[in-house]
Picture 1 (cartoon, rainbow, N blue to C red):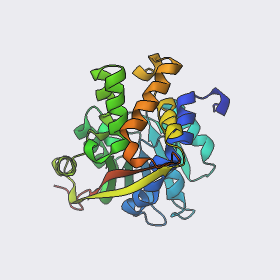
Picture 2 (cartoon, rainbow, N blue to C red):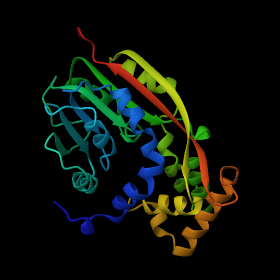
Picture 3 (cartoon, helix red, strand yellow):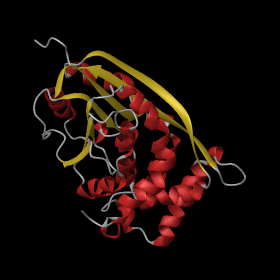
Picture 4 (cartoon, rainbow, N blue to C red):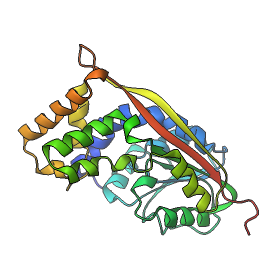
Length: 272
């Protein structure tokens, strides 16, 4: 297992700079969506730094299991350092080829991951394979870009200061922002009793400039941001704050709307 000092700095920044204010406010809502039984066998797909796994454990008894899955080995190494619990195991895997037996799981969560998979239909079919009949799938995706000022500001700023391609890359987080599209994906993949709720809440940070700088430090290695000088990154932070001016108070505190699609569906209890 890697020591924390050996980890990719962007992974550490992601968990320290983004998770507490941008992702943590959604965690309990996501676990409510998973609706685990005390003894559930849960898979958390695209588990990242382990946020949902940590919250799931509070709802489960000693007979339960939680299996975190991610394709990013550095993220998994960090996640494993944040959780010391015999109920948890970690798996480096492609989402379309999960390392589990068919019909072996009764809950699967995917918090802010589905929009990044190249073949979403293949992933949803693979999830159906591992879910037992009647088991529950819980998915969250960021809503439409126009309803999420934070990634919208990052996208516009990158487009202005780098190029159009870089701006578009920063908006990928909202690629499944349309709740109808998300529901249709689940239906086409054969899930039943599908529900998609759009929820909005304010997320806050004590310092808007620090939040923007933290966002840049948490971007994966190889992004266009890596090629910017320190001064250029500071300029990008300034442009983001200008774009978000309506959400920043006189003391520099940020309070910005965050919109999320929360979707659930069930593996058919009597599959044909």
